Image (cartoon, rainbow, N blue to C red):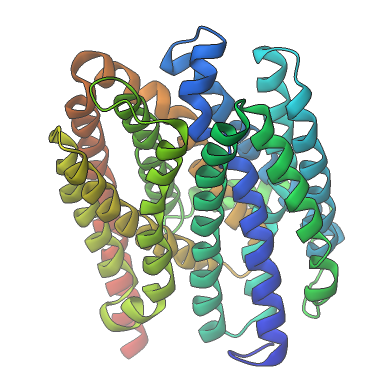
Length: 398
């Protein structure tokens, strides 16, 4: 297996990081455009949100499919092939004749974008030593947040400079295709991959869902992302309206608050080694709940500070949850990791619906209440996992 800081480890980690950036640039480019789409197509905040929700829902639908294909055919070809198709679909979005066709294309693009996230953690789990795995996952998740930042910031900026939202899809998909050309050269072939037997996918899926070490963390990931991602949508609608009335480019810059998430992902390995995986997860959830209280303010600097704190806490919790899944299974790793991401992106798709009544009732303070309610649930689930972790440590010492 490949150890930390070797040349092969760096090649693989950089390739997966770049691929992750490309996935999330194209997944989240639509988010700063939602107020623009609502205006052009005469939609509500919830209706315009389908330009984002369709892609995350498509991604959730594709994860288990591509994970099973990768378990049988290999990781590398699935990651490279599906990403190429998704980027080509991204180009077609610029010529979507209406909002319905845009939503359908975004859903199909999300389905193919699922190939790399469905497979990357399983690839790392097979090819890297345990200490290399923790660091690689932290870097990979940092790349997730960097891709999300780039897609949102440049999506809003390009649309404002060009005067229409179509330019964002066209330019970012085109640049992504050029960068995709580096991946086949960087990503090493799998050396430890063993094809999964045929006909056992359903049994393996049920085993993972019933596993008491996995289903709580699946819910933690899905519920946390449900409120974290979609709070940005409602913050963007709040800030695009009078009296603040930010332009699309400024709304895109709002997502620079994800940089604290990149920092959190990068230091997650250090924090886990110092405090333990579940203690770090539980602390991250608590910080996220406290940070969200800043959304109760009407002042822009306080709202931005709240998003900075929430981003750090969320991505720290995501790194912990992903590492927990990676270390808790020995078979059908791609399926286990993909099942986590199914919950994760299904939560992203449903979060707009969940928070919408809170938004209608009380604006951002209502969104804050909805977020804290979810943090209470995920905090309880993390506490349950902490008990499992302590029992494991006690049995190891005996």
